[in-house]
Image: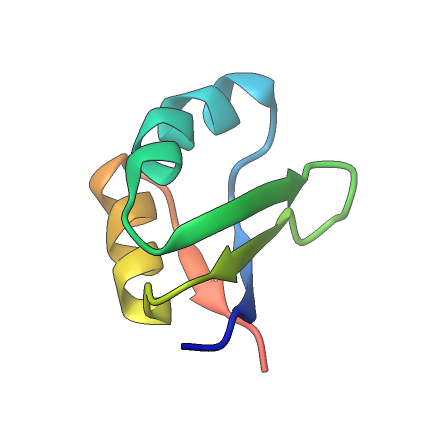
Length: 72
């Protein structure tokens, strides 16, 4: 399966917000790397996928009380 890169507009505003989703994204099967650009006005979450779907990433973020909206 080829690696895909997904980007999401989020409301992860700071390191504290990012730390709340960190463990779940780190342990999610199919995620090989992820990063949140909190300096960007849209708080862009970039996920390098090895099998996880956009919907699964959105569900993880929502389960922690944040929003994630796929871009593109």
